[in-house]
Length: 181
Ligand SMILES: Cc1cc2nc3c(=O)[nH]c(=O)nc-3n(C[C@H](O)[C@H](O)[C@H](O)COP(=O)(O)O)c2cc1C
Image 1 (cartoon, rainbow, N blue to C red):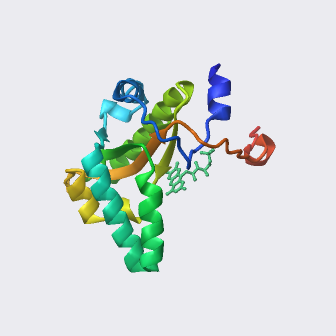
Image 2 (image 1 turned 180 degrees about the vertical axis):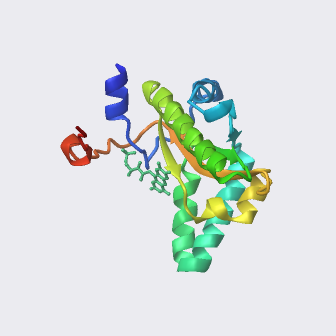
Image 3 (image 1 turned 90 degrees about the horizontal axis):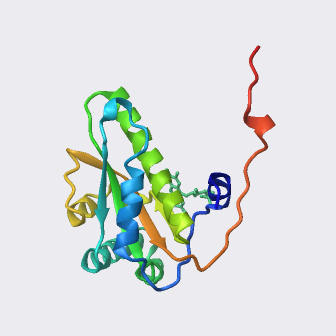
């Protein structure tokens, strides 16, 4: 695929086939991710490759959180859905006391996640970047061994071979472009 095709065809994937992509491919994607632009070369990203045991704990934590908020049936539904997601990765950004640096470091992590997504898409692997309530929960930080005083979670990334072909749309360029004299 050309770069244009990769950018245009990449979609967030919600539904995955059951087989889990090899760690080797994910490591290659992380290797590409870290070449994202980052101001002052802070390299603020950290990647947590989540194994089966941690995944199960996350699934249970999420079922508990959803159950408390929306009732046991909703919790059980999430447990089932999340259990079926094959690949799990968390991406964090290192914290800074300087708000500008924090903003720029977050932006750099977003660029890194897009690099990762495009590399994986080229390999036939889709991701979904999630930022639901769970990524702000202290128990989630504990499960992925992250100290919230030092790093904050940018996203929980699900990955796997797509079992759907979603379509998406964007506004026309003329709607988002301001031409200046
Ligand atoms: C910072 C960020 C957070 C996101 N969080 C969620 C999320 O919590 N749940 C979700 O379903 N999708 C989430 N997404 C994915 C978007 O919903 C998705 O990119 C959007 O619908 C456009 O679809 P596309 O990625 O296929 O082009 C997130 C995307 C970004 C960049």
